[in-house]
Image 1: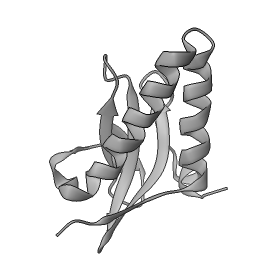
Image 2 (image 1 turned 90 degrees about the vertical axis):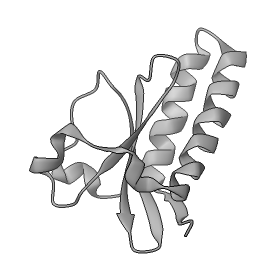
Image 3 (image 1 turned 45 degrees about the vertical axis):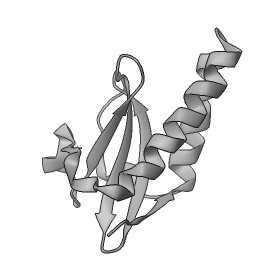
Image 4 (image 1 turned 45 degrees about the horizontal axis):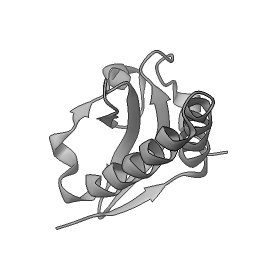
Length: 107
């Protein structure tokens, strides 16, 4: 059963900020990266449990998994599985700090 994928406002904002950062050095590559990442995120619904649980899962109230993306797999789309849908709660560079419970509130 394929699940619907929902990207929160916060995650979308973080995704666009990452693309903007990449665009400072390589505008064309940034567009390709952005569209490829969105496509990969939408495919999570095919089999979300094949993705690893995030390292910080013990500190969080819900189980979160991550899709690693990019040539160096340096960006994470962090998501949770809720019944028949996937909710992407954050997009982070691997060098960014771990998620905290307050980061799960969509702004």
